[in-house]
Picture 1 (cartoon, rainbow, N blue to C red):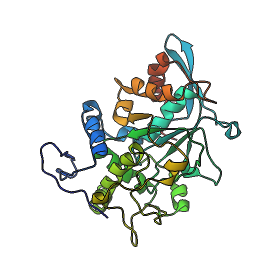
Picture 2: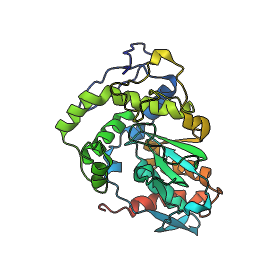
Picture 3: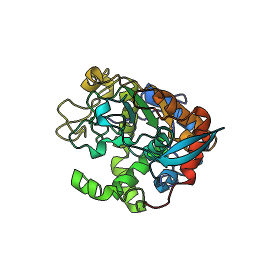
Picture 4: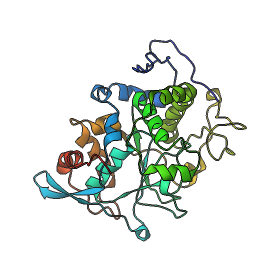
Length: 319
């Protein structure tokens, strides 16, 4: 697998500062991913908030009712009628990016439940769907049913440890049965330090590559970083990921034939969870799904602050 090349120019480096591992090395990353990193690192309030925020939120799927004058009230969100051919919005992210909070906020504002490709049953899912594709944790389970993409990005300083916590809770599963048996108790514990240190030392460089390539894939309309025969997109023997120096890489056929993969909006998890910016970040999502087919209950923009606050206020601490 290609590695990220150490680079020491003052204009082309970024640092991870971790209280677990004090000084990660400097890395050169792709131009697209580097831009996203800069945007996230400039979000100072987001850097000051511990990533446990998302792991501790156990929210009920709910729709806020518009009471007028910016006020709202919570009620339940409904599953979409899969036979109604709804307008499809695909929420994409690297795993552990804070998609949990994102879909909760989206459901609160729209009244439509967000589907998950993890629970893919062989039938095409549509409407509002979240995925981790093309990361090996995700699958393309929605065929041609999606019409637009929203990309969620989280600072990798928190994102990669958060992903490790999740797979720890799933017992590092390599099969669906083990993962499914543990998925309903996820977001309830933290990985022991020894587990994190071992996984970090073994996987960090690979996962940082995948974090950057996840952004490149969507921003570049499907730039494929894996061999066509590597169906799991794992980059493991006998396969390997493509070499950075041999770009341009080929495009994924899904983005050629099924969907325009370029995101219509980019959501910062750090901004979405922060009290000063959460409502405005939520409005970016709402503005893309309002007036779309089968999205008839979208609340007005002036209620988004209420939706944001109500979501946090009514979040139970346990499932």
